[in-house]
Length: 394
Image (cartoon, rainbow, N blue to C red):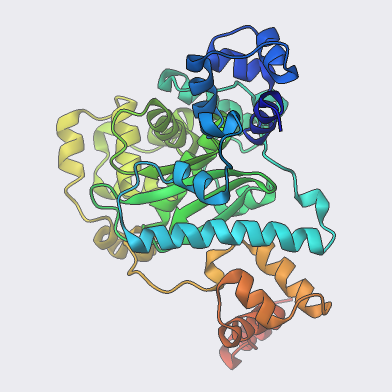
């Protein structure tokens, strides 16, 4: 394969147009075209920039080495702390994505193999890293998907409906440099997101919105692992700001406060009620109040000292929504509903055995069979639950 063909192949893998590549490297689009058709050759500096942009290597572009899956993953893992458990979970996720793509092809579901994705036309802004634009773009995304201005009921379900493949993994305590989540623009499946299941539901929602920002505005990066200690990476700062405004729009937040007693009467309990309304963490809600200048830093520091889980119990809210869960072994909970439903249909149609499904999902056949039974035939109602129907007036 020639240099030009390798450049074209890697650009397509990154879901970039020639115009996108030209803006990133700082050369005319016509020059990108000439490099790809072989009439011109990039210099050493340009090759290095292209290799970085395409998550490749100069030697691969020059045909001196192959670029296997291991090499691509090492690029993906760059800067990741050496934690065998985390590396194993990431490997499990990436392996599942490849095997899932193979299964969809075998089942004749080619329409689900979109290849590396780009945002919808009305949202495609190219690479955006200026966090000052994040709030406006977050509202633009809400408008595009007709999400309104209030709370999003279930972000997992929303992303699943948009063919974003979201999985969970037990990645441990976030700590100083723990993993919050990851985004990967898979070469056959498109947008894929991984969420650390060892965080609160509200924190998981923030991670989902954060990774969705990477999908929409940093898709050429191929893959991004998001850590708490991300330094001054502008992509991470942009994604954080986007997530905060996407989940808690300023207009709705201010409206809710006006409808109540006003921000001057807002205490920790009212802040928690707002967090429950927006389905975000207590910390995210306080951050938004501070960011909108609705509370000052002194009040912010005071409010953050209270326990959201204890306050939730006092308010008769679900305290588990504000508690950091104990790490546990995940089975089908790893995967979105669409994946589980597809697996169940394949088993019912004798296109897949339970053992084969277990290999793909990394779940032992016995456990998988027991959990699938719950999907196919939900548990029967208890006597007290049946009586409720009898008590209804119609």
